[in-house]
Image 1 (cartoon, rainbow, N blue to C red):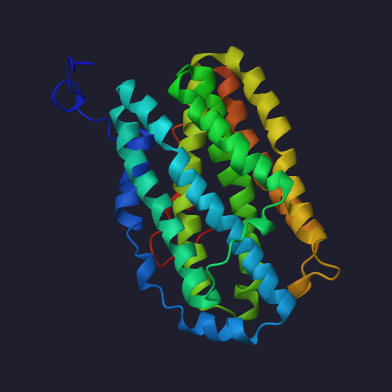
Image 2 (image 1 turned 135 degrees about the vertical axis):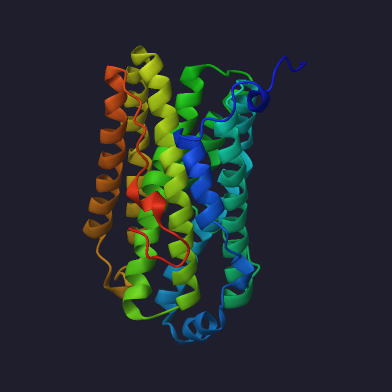
Length: 300
């Protein structure tokens, strides 16, 4: 398909737009190197953990490692659709999005090799509910865009990717790592990485909320489909949490399932409340506060 015009030499870039503001934050706050994180103390802490504690850390890393690889691989159809629609500001942001997901994949791989020191197949940690979400629902929703580029398909992809996988499952996983490790003074390298990953993901989630809101505000009849999908998909991260706790007779680190179920529901409710504004034709131009966190600052 031939180009007919270029945004940057005709209308110019809209620097007040949410995507370009997020891109600016990514340029300022997202420059960190997974290879520069010191994991020496993490290895020493790993060797001192009890067997069940090591198993839980490895289980969560196995979930994150596959999840980060999946979102890195599966975002490409969305980038292609956004580019073809000529939404240059969004495409510019999505270049940082893909790069950051690749860095996350890189970090967890490095942790497995240098701290756990294993190259074993960790697929046994992926429960049926996890496989349903990450192995099937996520790639199905994203790669549908290769043949169906409709607003409805884009909204479905972003709800699955940004709202459920990132906004609920990953956010709850970050909370688990903080509760297990940071509160016990363990594995400072992993804790530092989780803080930085959470910082990156705040921008990704903000973009997803913007994208779905933009689509629904333009066509409020799509809200019913979005609402149905949200209600259906939230069951999967809740089941994944149950699967993790169900793997242990006594949960390591003194964790309790209610803490994480309530945290996941709170994250979900916040995302839904944000999206509900679009039902009345309103696309929010706000950026969540946690997307403002710079490198080295605690993320909220």
